[in-house]
Image (cartoon, rainbow, N blue to C red; front, top):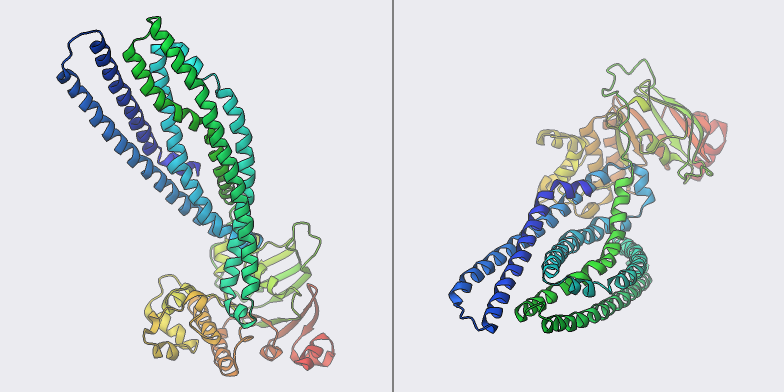
Length: 567
């Protein structure tokens, strides 16, 4: 945020310069009027032509300065917001996978939209107004000191009290704003869940349940907002009361100074005009602490994202070894892992296995036993706590992370498609893929004929998360991605678990094609999909408790055999 502000500081400088010129033009015009008034009251003959031209010049200069001040201020705010959004988005995409598991979708979305808008309000309203007010007060104060220094002393007499009041109010407002932001995160999260789960919600008639949850959060937001409004309104009233008292004394003292001959009637008139211009800025400067502390909550929430370290880039291995037959493709020795920082509950416990080039192995077991976590560690989404992980004979820590991930093609049961065209979704598998390569990948994935039957063909929009396609069609598009990537290791996370028999047959046929010449690691719940695996590892409580091929495990009559019988 600071870099974004400094990078465009020339716009802020221009804003300050034209704000200063505007204030000076007003004061100079005021001087002309005061001088003309005093000449008239003293009986001197004045010629308006002597004053009209300078006044018109001052008006023109002030108008131009006001316009340019506004332009540069808005440019500065817009550009800073743009730069922060771009840099925050880039930084967010480079954060470790654990950050997205830790933070809810609602919190991240609120920070990217609402908190950045609040930050934009700081640069578009608070900061420019603060600078304008400071410049106005400085120039007007210098002018009043030259007229009579006692006027300034009386005017500022009550402002220490105002500072104390403003400080107490701003602290309370910051506390309420922090709570309000938390409620906004929760509201965004629940609304997002209600929309994403609309089919489930309507199937189970959960309209009232979702509505009540959202209404409760909104009521809490309104309650916090009302408390903030009450405190803000109290601050506004106190500001006006505190600033009114010294103004009355200033006018009385100015009248006394006229009777003593120390200032003229024209200067009194000028003082009245300047006083009206200085009162509002002084109060705004003092009470802007309220706004700054409120916006400071959003700035801290944005800064919290910036403060998170980006995902490590890894080591210096940038090329996949050409000859992968000598060393195991993947080798684990005594791998331990847990998600929580306290390390009280281990998901993987001393897990060891190895896979040679061209082999097909599988992991089976009940839900929550750690199978999916294996894939996350293989791809480097999380770091192991203990143990050794070698990829193509090299410690995983020595691999460049992007290069290591290029070794894997993942086909998951939870297929994610971007709300773009079929072509764009398949092309994710390879940068700058040609149309011919995309079509060939789709043919291998048994999805080309279906795509060509659509009116828009490969240009068909799939909708949010691929909602316009069936589960089997989405799965085959994900397989086409994997074909296009053509990585040496294929990770299959139960790719046929949620499709019908016909779709399963097509997917299995596509998987057999994509598996040719690849090292394949499968996670399976349907044991029929792993019968041909060279080795099957049975996982229970993060440990490998059985190992062998299909026939060997059935003969052992253990956990695998029991799972197979139960189907």
